[in-house]
Length: 223
Image 1 (tube, rainbow, N blue to C red):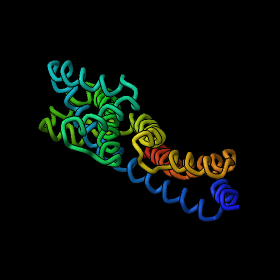
Image 2 (cartoon, one colour; image 1 turned 135 degrees about the horizontal axis):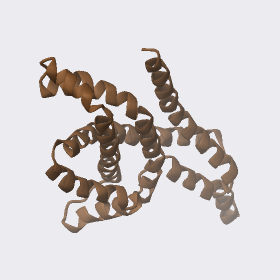
Image 3 (cartoon, helix red, strand yellow; image 1 turned 180 degrees about the vertical axis):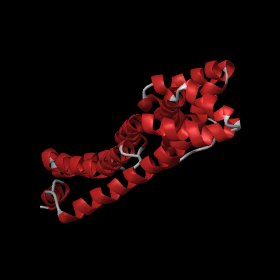
């Protein structure tokens, strides 16, 4: 009787508490994605500017960034997470996932930022310099405002991609939506219900990004 009772308890159906469990995991997904997107965008803009600064930085930095864009993210996560224990510096899954996602995001955003800078016509930049603007004033008042409008849709695509790619951090043991769904599917044996709810959570996290960028694009069309 005791073994039957434990089996019933383990393979129980989906409960209300499980919904809260998924909501907490969605918070974990949102947290690690927000860190990766915000910090990665900052460094990505710096790297994108460096790629246009000189041919030397374009070759050297571009080669490094190509590694992060080319190597599958799951391999980067596993290599980084297992490297620190080898040298005697254990790292927790959240920190490892955040660092790798930041570098991955910055590598993607760097190319987006580079495209935005190069999208500004040379004639416009010459005109700003002829008005007496310094290089940094030209970058601040001309290049970035104009380039931002050109690359906003591409940046939104990167942000949405990183949000979904954050599910790969589950291989490190970090509790986010995918790992939480795996735990519940194993216990409840109801994959359709759980994955449907997880899909709704991902939609709720992604929709504000796409909606906000769409509104900004529409507003800038009339400015």
